Length: 438
Image 1: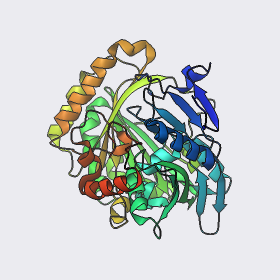
Image 2: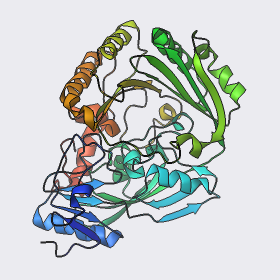
Image 3: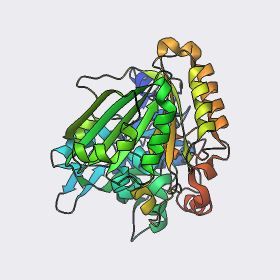
Image 4: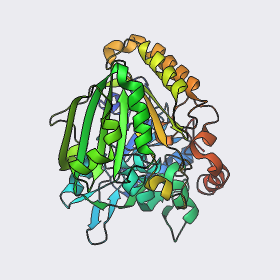
């Protein structure tokens, strides 16, 4: 059955199959035909050619964190790139060329040795490729742009088994498409060249307020965000009982950051207020020895182009106050966009939401002993998302959500027509199909 496949090949007959077929979101349960862990590009080419000849769908997987588990499927060929870990760095110009298998944690600690940081998110076990190809928000974004803005070249194996280099000089259409729409649409990305930035220390700020301050905090957060210096990226997150501020400042003293956020910090009843001056890598690390608990989850994102006033806030408060009784508690986050993300509007990319002000993140995760509430929780998230659509529409590809209608337009806006042309060129067979693919 698997003749022609190379690398580490796992089939249903292997003892390890039942462990490696699962993704991070344990709500989903799929049985792929075969899982291939390539050790080099040749193994990827062999897997793509094998799948095409047999007419079997391919799913690409890096960290396995796709929110809807699109990176695995029943009877598919899963190409898991986690063994592709080549690494080269040019410290003079600030570029790295890496295999597509790195997790953020692996890359952050590797780069710290050289005094650099990659513009990615804060969840350590997520794959760098997935983050970058789907856009890539994170705590350096207002100063350095999205992760996809920092992609300068990619090497990809397309549906024909061809190895293609895409950058701003060759295969420019594919390069633009990979910046924001690259996840499992055009082929298997095997390597990335990224701009990285000198990793000076960052100032990290935490503050917390009780539930009755949440409206004031959200309004002050938005007000501060209107003309905040690009060096600062801030997020507020509320649960049923509290609202938290988390902020990162690049090349900033604690005093400067306090001044920049003073309006927000003046909201009364503040508790647990701290500022720290630490390396960027330390800021994204969980506590040492931290092992994440396996969870099921439903997470979705909405992009708000206008400030969120009383009505949307009240909707969110009402939902939170009546949220399903799962653990950990459900939270809603507001991540400040703008800065370099908006300034990069002329970069060739598939990411259309440069003008959005805030990414609203609805995050419901449950440990497995709360699984009986899973379907209610998913319904709760879907209903809240629908109620917020008049105030924050659109989706964000890295927060893919199977319940978004008109998903292509929601993720890619007016880029959809040319993305379809690029898809036709590199994957006319739709070998890289998935439920919300192009």
